[in-house]
Image 1: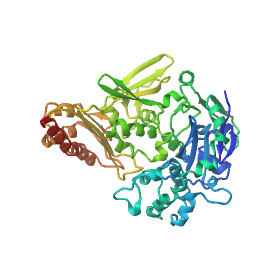
Image 2: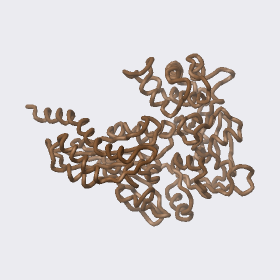
Image 3: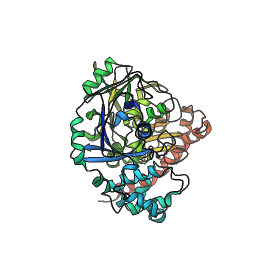
Image 4: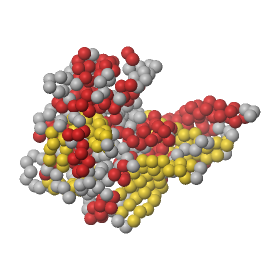
Length: 505
């Protein structure tokens, strides 16, 4: 049992103890090490100015990802190699991404620039620079670069010059691996991955966080035992929501239970069941890994997942965290509701399975017992006879909280609707399955009139409120119109399928 965190920062091995373990990464870098190139602007994971690179061994290789350091605690980085903007240059020579931003005039005030540099460095290392150009990209900008930089905001330079710098820097994607070769640190990191952590922060520890305790198990059995013995411990999956609350002074946590080192909980796979298939994910499966799986097995959810925060959020945010947080505008929930997903809950007493539609008892309240953990999510994948679409409405496309969310799943036999599953978010204290609206569709023809009539039923089945993201009337209008939108998005697809089925052999 280890009582300290081990990580590497810009090539230097560090052991961190006591209260410093509970600092956010940005605070530790700035206050303890004087690495002030990591900027803090929003302290919410929205702007990307605090972006750093984190390398973690995966098998025989190292995976480098950009993350928001303002909402990532130091204890979550145990066994990682962290690189800040100060760590890119070597022997007075700037990294290609740094030089490219200078050459392309990609910086004005410079406050956001370090974050852009770190995101670009990670993208170049991953080879994202080789994406195909988009039809609408300005000055040759690629669709992939827009996605890679969605987690970084600039208020004065404008993005064209930054995109130009990204394309130029992409000519040398090997810089990061040469700068910090895995041989200098990754072997020890792999060995240390088997260590469980139990770290205390005693009182009187300077200006660091004091009076805290961290449990970081490496097996599910150990995690469940800790959960039973310390039910008051705050469970950490990705902490993208907890980090924000911490920075705003809304949390007073005396004990943390971090599940990030329980390897079984990070899995995602597809299991065949009869004629169908099931997407099976552990509770700490990241949104990056979930998105990759859905691109292959469930494309219907991809447009929503692509705007689930920015890359820095998706790399660390988790499916289980989004479910347990239970926000009625959680982006993943409508799809899980519409697909009749089930949740696996575990404790030292055993395991039980709960339909996600029965998991919530009220606003951010669930049926989880004090000694239970969410360990698995099983979501049936759409069949070939089903039409499925997810929707997210927000004021801006990227990096915004939803005003309204929806998932619609329709099965057809010829032109007749044989089953319907409809889930809306942002229209009540929890995500809702609209049973009356579903019933109004079954047995009806697949026509615009059918979906307009269903929209009227949906309008009467929800009780939205007005808030800063949208008015009650706006949400009611969306509840009607999204069903008509679904019809128009699928009418040609369905028509072509019918023509193909009717064609002579």
